[in-house]
Image 1 (spheres, rainbow over the protein chains, first blue to last red):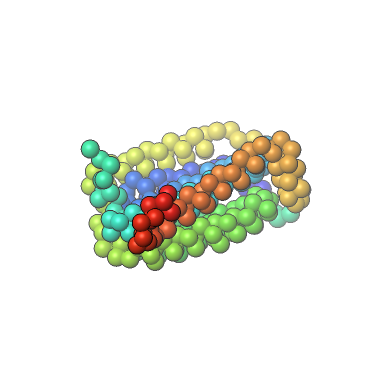
Image 2 (cartoon, chains in turn orange, red; image 1 turned 90 degrees about the vertical axis):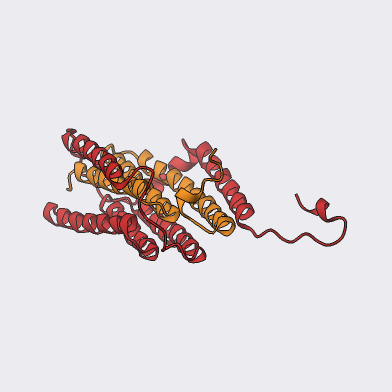
Length: 100
Length: 180
């Protein structure tokens, strides 16, 4: 058996990579993909800990996270495309229309 | 059941592939490479699910993420052309501060993970998880399950509303009444 800490450690590394992508990159599509990486890291922790507890709840939570991720993908990418169509940029530093 | 050494070797290979692809997603200069590396990262996570004996979750991961979300992302990449020319560094924070935050957060999470005395799981026989998941969704979790379908419907309508092209108004006087 692979020790449980390996799975949770892999989840932590993936989450850190996602945080790095969100903090360091300015392309909004890369930020979006990094958020997907973070959601996957959390799902991985849910499944691993649910298996450790011998419970099905962890896997059920994964489906709710996936639902929110799918909704986020649809609406987020629609917003990105609408913004790009109006502003001709996807650089987050230049999307300052609502800044006062 | 796999023996311990083989399972660990498989885990290391899948974990290395997953972390490598995820790093490529986050740090690649070319956004098209990022989008396709996302496929590898998500498939790697699906492989870890299989290693955790979560067969149904792994299948849904491939169907939903690789088949749906990645395709949507690649569509967005292709529809927003000329995005490879932009500066990639965050001028508001700077790469130094960002890396410091990432290193701190990652170190804390890894420390907590490795220091926690995880109890070893009892060896569970590999059985299909579909039965248990279906029972949970139609039993304890039936209300969140229904609310999730409403969330998906709202997201669908919202995405179509946001991303559609505005149709030009018709020429006659009743133009304003037809448009919301």
